[in-house]
Image 1 (tube, one colour):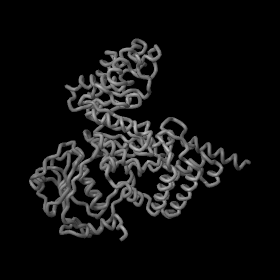
Image 2 (tube, one colour):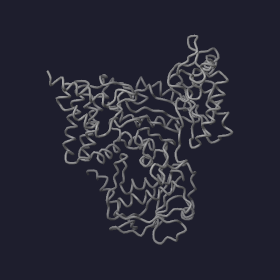
Image 3 (cartoon, one colour):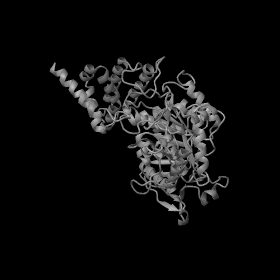
Image 4 (cartoon, rainbow, N blue to C red):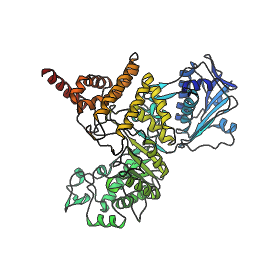
Amino acid sequence: MKKLSLFLLVFLCGCTGSHTLFHKGTSNYTIVIDADAPASEQYAATELQHWLREVSGVELPIGSLTDGVKGRRLIVGYNALVAEMMPDAEKPADRDDAFTWCNKGGDILFWGGAKRGTLYAVYSFLERELGCRWYAKDVSIAPKQTRWRFGNLYNHEAPAIFIRDNCYLDPLNTPAFSARLRNNFVRLPGKRDGETIPGTAEGYLGVHSMGDYVSPKEFYATHPEYFSLIDGQRRSDYAQLCLSNPDVLRLCTERVRERMRRHPDYLIYSMEQNDNQAYCTCDSCAAIAERYGGQSGLMVWFVNQVADAVRDEFPDKFIGTFAYQYTRHAPTGIKPHDNVVIRLCSIECCLMHNYDDCEQNRAFLDDLKAWGAIAPHLYIWDYVTNFPLYCLPVANWKTLQPHIRDFRDNHAIGILEEGDYQTVSCEMREMRTYLLAKLMWNPDEDVDALILDFTNGYFGAAAPYIRQYLDLEERILRRPGMHVNCFTNVHAEHYTDEFVREGRRLFAEARAAVSDDPVLLARVEKEELALCFMQLERTPQEGIENGADVLFRRVVEREGIDKMTEWTAPRAKDYMEKYEKMKNEMFTK
């Protein structure tokens, strides 16, 4: 038997049961919240109201427990009514993102932690029962229905990862979309445009912060001893600090404490090395490093002291530090204190393979297990795109899940998945954002089903060709022997001219399938930008003859693409000028 479509399943499920939520534009239900409900639960009520209206055409009123509501109720948030109706349910902790939704007779109850859990309960219900989807910041699906009935409802979920930081441009800059993805690194939206609700994010303030606390510009002239000693000279540039110097410890402690006072809305505060490997080699630093198994031991020794110093004033906050490059290996003879977070970075890893079946990844897996065994709080900084050129295809669809599972299994409390946080030029960015959100919540989701769901909903009639293109990536870019990290170039070995040509052929079919729908056509063309760029860079004459330059320019201008790389240049306009010059030279010849 062929599988039923998502929306047919939603329709069938909504037509059975003994209670009717809505029918032909009418409903006797009221959304009920506590009169003193926190802002996040008020927002949950308005989101439930909005999306039910999108599905049914009915706008349910929102009332409070004290209003004497008549008729059936959608009860939002853990309150006195939920406690009465569900006496075995315990009140969740405010920051608990776990949630439950169920029915009690004809009433439906939604509750979880007051910060975000109740809102996530609402989104889960809308997704599972009514078929709503939020594929991108401006692409939402609310299947229209004339009637929805239900019998027995029950769903309870808890996230596998406590802090879920989807470091892509759209969730970072669009709080409503971020909330719908259940990303809790960004605050929930407030009542007015541009406002957010304080206390609704599990934030990590800062990165590479040691250079901010003690900078050469401020201190080198008077205190060169604060900075790395390398080859007999104290460094005056953006190197590292001399961590054995007691004045450096004092300054870092004072300044992180000041930052915590100024920005109390964060959970973790960075005390992390600068972005280079120029660590101090003075006798004192070297001796501490040797005592504790390397540079990571020196770093933990230093950060433990900072964490101890701020503990009394900030008992519910954490100091975070890197396990990154020269500090990636776990130390010996010392452990991070219980208010220290270790942020382990996977920057050297191959994106194409699991950690346990790739010679380039096994050392990282060893480090992950070692840190997981000693760190009370492990946070992963993972890399899932190509930073020198965001648009280049990264065929890591099969490894996102096993990587996140490994993080979960080694007790990670948080994951930062770093993607195109600066631009919209990254290939398949919407789908990768969607998959990462789903997998950080539940690493055991069916990835193939998620891809099928996303491609059908986002690309419409072009979806089969997009999935064929993903199969092409799998077959060519992940062929045996290929190892790719997050720093590659357009002429890298795993890319081939066959891949580019076959990919463009599939995209031509995808474009033809949606040629009568400008919105879907624009989405397909945006994903073809990567192949156009590759063809113009690898075989420029062929690219121009096949119109790659025309499509490249059209997408860049329509999407407002500026940055093509994590760094300053080259920019999209530089490539457009380059291709225009190439085209003129071809016609001149």
